[in-house]
Image 1: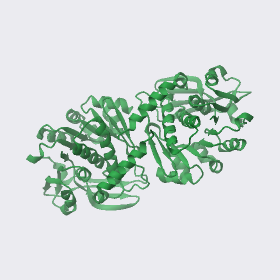
Image 2: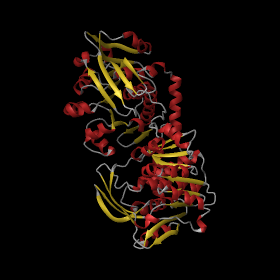
Image 3: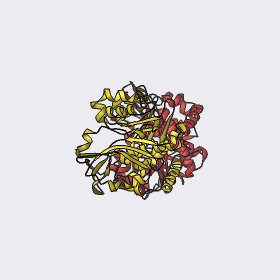
Image 4: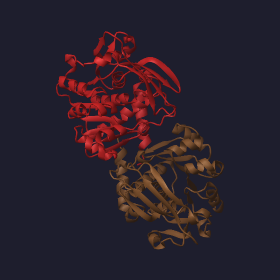
Length: 300
Length: 300
């Protein structure tokens, strides 16, 4: 089965303690597609300006990503500049130039509308809902959001959440959205808003899958060198949903495997700047690391 | 096989958002013994004042804890007062009255000296070394320490670490002791100081076992109500080392199981004030929760 992603395409300038990159490929739709395309075909919806180096995403087309939903608008591409501190856990946004992304109104090509698996990356909740309204009964809707939308457009977000099956969210957003500190109680509150399944991203501490009657705890891969954490969350989502779509199986047991595929892809993403590592990556490397995850948690 | 523990016995006064307890049983040796005694016989070395309510630790004797190394000195028992904030992750020390603990000089009864498994709880590193010097070639030495000793008695700590097999330590102490932010690089540095195995305690994020060529990642048990986190670390150590001593098997595979037993015991500890939950606990409950840990991480 194929996956639809709606999100951003950007040119990122990133400084980390290990180096810097200028105008490197970025944005949630790009990271997600780079990752999900290892598993299945992807329909991408995003917008870039007419300064965007389309040749640099040729690799996506080669991997079965349909770019007919990528709108090329008059103007400049969304640009983000950020700097990470020494521990790579905190980052400072140096600038955010929305450019053509400011007026992003996702319009789905006709042949996208029946895509069974949908990822609504972190954009304005109203736009996420607009996308769902264009679709013909998707099988599974996964949504990502952030503190910015929880603070400013909570009502819209809650409206959208009603139509969401799986919410991907981090610790602090979980607490903020629910108003509850204990993550497991918080999860119950959020489940009552719509999404019956939560994937809690905890960065270097791994991820948790919380369904209505089950918990699953996934480790983070132990990396001695972490180079650039940008895009790890969307890469996780790509591995997670890409695997679910490929297998077309949304059982709790398969969701667990999908979380590990997400974690596997994210662990590669952070090894180099931008999407570089995802471009070089092979399916064999993915399978090998997935197997290392088995070893990482096995005790019986 | 039996276990020796050297540590503190205290009377704790604790405030949490859920209530308070005055002069409740506390101290590393008490928590450790309450936990390890589910698995094997324990030889305890600690000191209390003549105000200590010995009847309250009768349950330890009933469980096979040898208290002949518990010195009852003229004066008052070590008292600690602490207050936890709402999220229970931060605590404030209200007072620390060392009392008789200030002049604690652990002296091992003759029949303790051949105990094969040793836990040196968080006390002055020089005292930890004094204990080892009184022993006849223990099979396995496990040590706990804290930022206080890393800051003030680093040379002594490094001297003691040479004789340690397994160091139990948290994230920030790992970074502080090694001078390295990345935990996996930090572990390599600490391994070169002596202990070839590290157990990294990460609180609500679980624990990691780091040996020379292996990583193991253990989850924390998902608790919707966490009541009092005091003593969780020593309770973890008790379950961990108690299980190792009971099975007398220090293979990497068995160390993994031991980490899960440690996590299991710690998850019970925090459900009530002080050692209350550990007093009521049954072996069946331990086995049942251990099995839930299997379910928590299984994906293949």
